[in-house]
Length: 273
Image 1: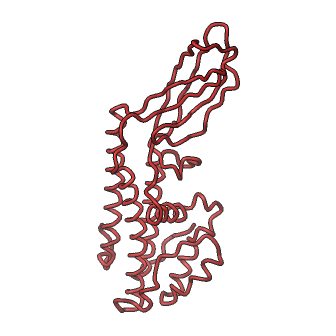
Image 2 (image 1 turned 30 degrees about the vertical axis):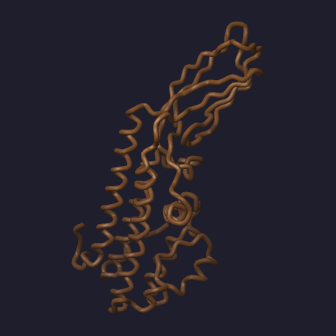
Image 3 (image 1 turned 135 degrees about the horizontal axis):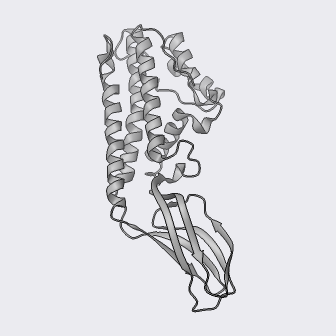
């Protein structure tokens, strides 16, 4: 990554950002290849009481590298922020390792109290850098659930300390029609909002009235599937998963270049909320 004099001091950050972009591209290619083989099947079932369900079933194994690529993408972004702050501390202190290196970490806090309890970790940075870091904290955002640092931190923590993210298909648009047998009608139909289909999952329920054993309903699906992770399926403010992950990469790039530029003596950039 080119830049002004001294930019090479942050080469580990630029390399990690490039690597994260590679992981994101590889994830998109792996999902497209998997979906091209039509691994999901839409089905309909009706019980003896006439209660029906429309579901989607995955009929081929999900590639293990999909959740791994997500985890590696998140790791590189989180590590970029920590690497950046470490080099900022080295520049400010003119020491390597800098004072307090074992306590230093890029701060991401959801409350002012959390910031206050942990600001000692940044005591060897300049006042200006602490102010810059405080301005971009999730608790400063109008909606923390849309704050990129908060999203990144939560997702990376789950992947690192709990388990890999559940990756699967999500119905994002399209129609779904169920036709009742002659003399009956579909009642009390309901779509299930954006479930992430791992092995199988319901996407709609309905009732056929009247219903007799041996009757059949006709299913006419016209659905669009996208890749999704379970922790982000409920709210998709930036559209596709690809768009949201690109937004995280863009935010980390902006925060890193902003902090690096100031540490190297250039005009403080806009690194607002």
